[in-house]
Length: 155
Image (cartoon, rainbow, N blue to C red):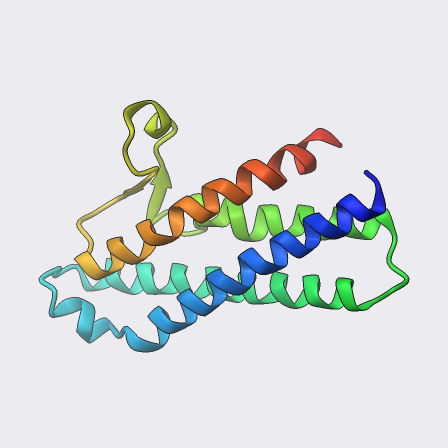
């Protein structure tokens, strides 16, 4: 991949992560287990796992954003470093969005054919949480398509 193209790709990922981190930070900072309980979902353990998954994803996205900024500020980076960075963001942020570590939700692989949301929750979730996750889904889908083919093509 040409360095100019790779730099542009890194900038695109950085802007995506900046938007996602801002939106996630706002949600996570304004949401508590008690506020989710008030929405009518009674499975406290599942609610804790939902918030834990959101916080974990936020941390990975913040780390990816910092790495992108550092890479772009460093004038002596190499093509392999950018590929490794994009791969890290792809697997730790993008794929983690669709497949969180604790499996509180999963991706419906047929969603593209059925014109439905890709994320399926394992149990009933508070409306504010599902609205939050679904509001991020389109951006994650788009960046996955843009970055995913580059990351997966060099394996």
